[in-house]
Image (cartoon, rainbow, N blue to C red; front, side, top):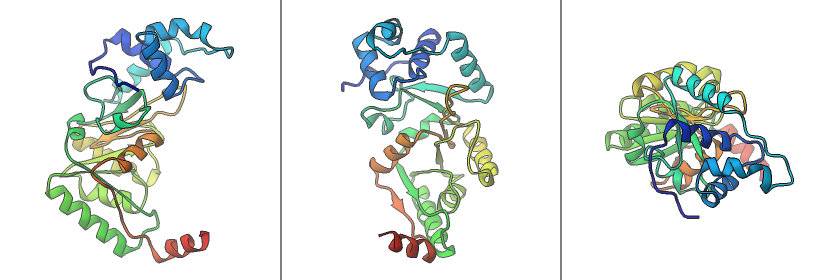
Length: 247
């Protein structure tokens, strides 16, 4: 699929783009096909009643406007996949998420990135080693990407607050998870001036917080599969025994 030319969206275009992306039954693949076929989100919205036997009903413009305003009240914003600030590595997914919400410094996405993820029930040695990896990579100029989970993820975020970290959240900016990491999430957002992805009342908010970045599960797989390679820290002995038992 040919990527659209990168350009910022006007407010009216952003509302149309978001309405189409929030339409039940329109996933990322269908979204991008419709935008390409009908020369934009406005044309795709006009075509929705005629392209499927299934009734596709987008949210109203007022509802989407309220979502965008709620994001802005949080210090966050929606970024469309056609816009210059959309993360280049995430855009390599085919199809990539049409929208992400972000709180923070989008310039972090232009720096070298390394994803470090690991066990929630990590051993002390595993957490120490992961922190060492993260610290040394940060000192070399890499921004560390992880998923804000307990254990390894939290440890590498904590270690790289000063050098740069991106938190990819599946649940959304308005409901960071797990609760134990709320203070860490706030610290990341405070460092970066914030970042994230939100879906208002229609679906859970998703986002990116660089330093604080949140995003969908598909987005997380993008960080792990793109260059530079990710690093998986050692898990605890108990987790290793469980994995062997599962095999």
